[in-house]
Length: 59
Image (cartoon, rainbow, N blue to C red; front, side, top):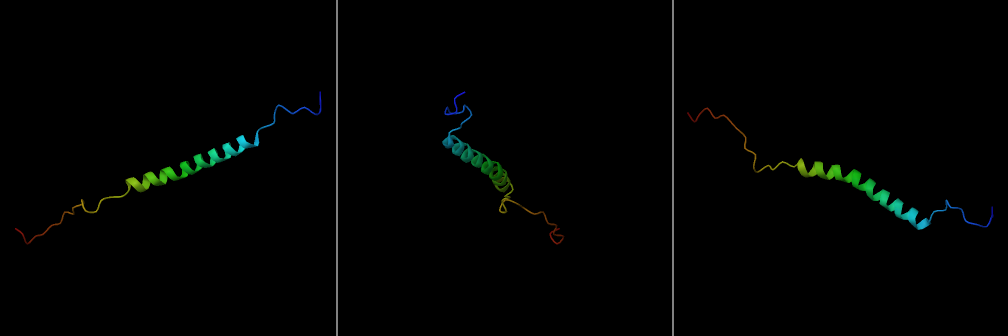
């Protein structure tokens, strides 16, 4: 075997950087999406809520 030949296992450093950025983006989406969904659907409109009260003087 020739010691000057490149190994077949060598990986392009640029592709490692792309994979790191892609992994960070996926992790960020995984953490942010549930928070966004919970925040979006947990807001209850206060103006549309009506409270039922009993007023005994209106008989």
